[in-house]
Image (tube, rainbow, N blue to C red; front, side, top):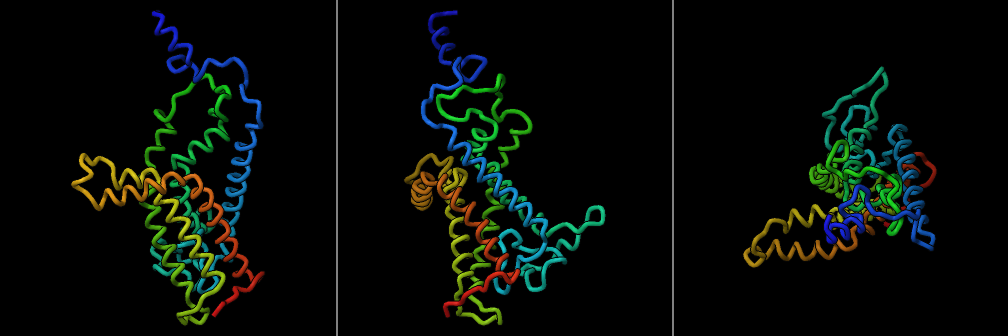
Length: 275
């Protein structure tokens, strides 16, 4: 081995492990706080979303519909909530009717699970790979996303496209929320603002996505020949800088939107109308 090869091996880049650090960590600060918060938020969201998906009620209060159940495409949907028909019908497993939410949540869940930022977040928090900068890699073997099942992360762009469709539908739901319970247009309630905020956060999360940036400006050999795409690329590039922020805000926003609709639909609170 040459002296150059020896130096490379010492860096850990070309060695069997991620880095040749014998100590558990070189950090002296409370580096574990951020991974702990990430785990707490993710686990809380998973528990809440799972509960809501199997609750199968309290997701529609005219004209508000929960983002967890939109679009509601099953014949078991609450009356008035199936804005786009019921092409799925009523499917069941072992005699138990499948919740309408399960047909929808798979797409936003897939989008977030394969998101570049979320990968970094849960790889470090749940798998400790690695948990923080200057903290030793605990795993003896590292193959990245080159093998199953993590190679499926490459399907991110397809979940991104599906997410855009859902964004359009949730925007439609926000527009519908300008009706009152009697179906009259030109009214605004707290629920209207909640659904509008949710749709806005989701659009910002999608627009700031790395896949969105690549879709708009990727593979262009000459920006000057594509001025419109270049302008759009510069805009989403600026948004991309805030992608982690939009990821968290939109995650909390969609959970809050569902929680608000649930409270209204269950009768726990009243959807206050401004006019």
